[in-house]
Amino acid sequence: MKNKKDIINRRSFIKASGIALTGTLASPLMVTAAGFKNESLQAWSCGGLAEAFIPASREYELKTGCKIAYTGAFAAALGKSLFGSATTEVFAPRVLELAQKLKKAGKMLSFQPLCFTKYVLLMPKGNPAEIESIEDMAKTGVRVIMTPNASAPGGKASLIILQKAGVFKQAKKNAVMMGDCVQTAMADLIKGKGDVAVMEQRLTRIPSFRDKTEQIDIPEKFIPGKPVPFSIGMMKWAKNKELAEDFIKFILSEKGQSYFEKAGFIPARSEEGERLTHKYGVIDA
Amino acid sequence: MLNIKRKISQIVFLFILGEFSFYGIFRCPFAVPYTECGSCPVVQCPGKKLWLSFWIILPISLLLFGRGFCSWACPGGLFSDLLSKVSLFKGKIKGKADKILSSIRYLVLLASITFIFLLNNPRWAIPIRTGEFYNSIKLTFEHANTFWLIRTVCIIIGFSLVLIIPHFWCRYLCPTGGLLEALKKISIFKYITTDQCNQCDKCRKVCSVETRPGEINCTNCGDCSNSCTVNAITLKKRY
Image 1: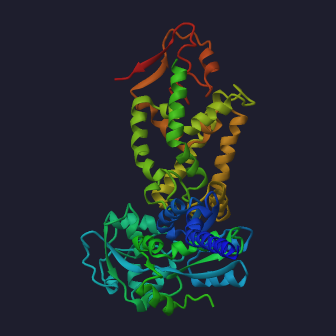
Image 2: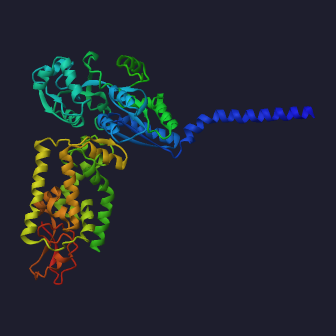
């Protein structure tokens, strides 16, 4: 009798262990593959990240079966809405200060570094004015395209770069266009209406602009720090915190980050990204 | 039969251009919509793929059928067609009043040309590059400047006035309609009335735009072609 009881116990133990093991092994798969099926998550980001977020979100939707309701627009405007009555579950803002303010206000629960933008000199194919450095923007006869009235990251930041490089006054004199939209400026540059512009590298990856410009790096000492880092964080309105966390985890995974690299950003989870994270202090303290 | 063909054409073009038209009014950040699509940051807008074809096809349609685009393809025309059926003041605006009101669209056209060619078509709203349907519209309104709000509210009011006067937008405000109206004389095909016309005005009564063939605001829709009791309406080939 005792032996039979032992056998039953052993059988029960093996059975229970099997179930537990299967459950343990299957649970992560269930969470990512089926656990979020038919659920939805609202994610907002700075508009500049749209080219990366759109395919990354689509991939996440295919992987999990959930729906990502993504909105990409000027981060400062979205931030203003979030300080008002608007809500979202995940937010990827530009400018570290915005993430910090949202966290301080208790609207963002936590954030992590997402990626970094890169400002470069862009010239039309063939580089007709033979631009070699930012200093060349001050040379007489060089047609400069400027976008002082574009939203701050494209407008103000590029002006600061010219100021720091000591070529602002002359470059302004050389300006053939003072626009309010970086995409219109890019289109004009490609058409050859200008010889050079300070732009973000990301613009060169937009399908209609791809492979239509030449670029030269701008020394880092001229780059203002403020508009460079992007972060991603969970908001207090996240209905399913596990889903929000899983989405952020995916965006920061090797696969997720590859979309940001393709879109012309420096992924935070890269050697260069880690250096910039440290440099700009993108830490959720 | 022609009327059915026209309705089918309008529905087909609604599928092709409907969303683009909608984006132009509610999401386009520029002063004059439908013109900067190639470099517009709103990635969701179908105009990115359509606008060039649109601006190539429009002059071709003008050359062939004058304002035919308005009655056979424009989603705004379809919208006006449907709502004009319930307009309060049908047949009340005619003659001089019709002509005076029709001139407003040339002012709108002039303003549009000025914005596009002289003022570099300024951006009056923060582009919501991509987003959910209602949320994006809400955000566009929230972060637009006063000029954009005035422009958009004027368009909405202009379209809504169809409930009072048939085809109000198409007849009096639409700058594209104004451009086509001003140039429609060059069209190869157009409906006209022959010498047999006895001025019974039956054609005007069946016309949703309240005009007669070949006259001001005639959009070559052909709805009147079978209404004439003396067969005085004909589709004329110009050249």
